[in-house]
Amino acid sequence: AQSRPVEAVEAAEHCLEVDGHRDAAWRVLIRACDAAGLAADSARARRGYSAMLASLGIPPSGGLSHPV
View (cartoon, rainbow, N blue to C red):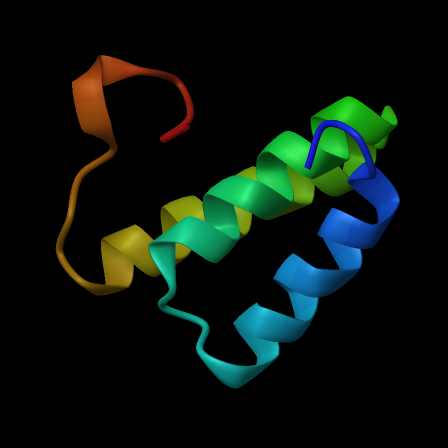
C-alpha cells in the first residue's frame, strides 16, 4: 500500500465489493488512501469500517477515534 497506494486503493475496494466484512481490506484501504493523500476517501473508508464493525457488534479498538 505504501509503494503503490493508488493500486492498493483499487485492490482493497475490489476486495470489499466481494466481501464487505474483510477486516484486512478495510485497513489496507484506509492506509492506502492516507498514503495517496486522499483525505476525503480516507475519512469515508474510516466511517465505513466503523459502520461495518458496529454492524457486527464490535466496538472500535483501543479507544482510538478510528479503528486503524
